[in-house]
Image (cartoon, rainbow, N blue to C red; front, side, top):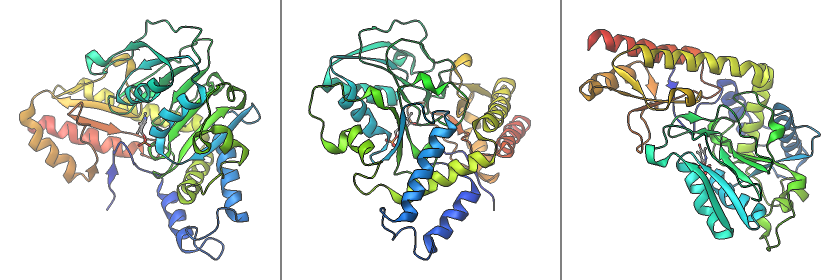
Length: 352
Ligand SMILES: *Cc1c(COP(=O)(O)O)cnc(C)c1O
């Protein structure tokens, strides 16, 4: 039976990728992918290909950037970015739980200027009027706020290095990625299974802080060893490579962005039309990846929950800090799944 997986992460990946990955567990040139050396020719080729595809999709090939696949999740990057880049002062835009956590990690390394925050409105919008101090070492933003369903529709131009947590919308929309100096993304939202984190960093950004950086937390260590300083998360990197290959075979970001726009238009259209529902995020900041919404009248909850579960929909419950529902519509989720959800919302309207 086909399940429509709206989970926020770990999340849906292409079926083709699951099939190829499961084959590689049994037989990857004779051995299992799980038992080969990360220094073997076959895995080095996987790492090279994954790095090349990541840069290619972002339009950053031969532009002074390195792609690394590290462990520790996006949460480790909250710490590593500050460790490597923060000498005196850094600026942060606080647009959600993840930005907030990034700020908390950075505080130990210098002065943190929170240029704006939407915390007082439970992060239901993206602050737009703020000033970024030009003497800060970098400005940190979160491009998509997975929990609250908001997304930066335009990227602030600030004239200082720009660091972006792109965990939940990387490879989902076209952008000029050269405006970023460092991008990081946990694999498990749009790229692969949990366990690997992609870091794309402009090399000339590094080596400027005076503190000693422990080897494992130092981007330059990982760059000098081509992301193989220690044993990398071999299987998550392999599956990420397959997903990036899938994306390329399906027309790349340009093509997937069109589908993502269609999915978002479909669900938000229904949220706005159907009087039983209301959206959570400010309309102009609505995320194309995570749509947050709720029932206006909680007495319909039991019926609605039964109906979407009966329609083989999974992962629709909202995060505990928002409540209601969250439909996560990452690259691998087909338009058809969103249509099924919209049908259920329309049937509820008839029954309620
Ligand atoms: C999920 C998520 C994180 C945390 O990722 P981990 O890999 O679990 O550490 C950070 N930032 C954003 C935007 C996320 O969606």
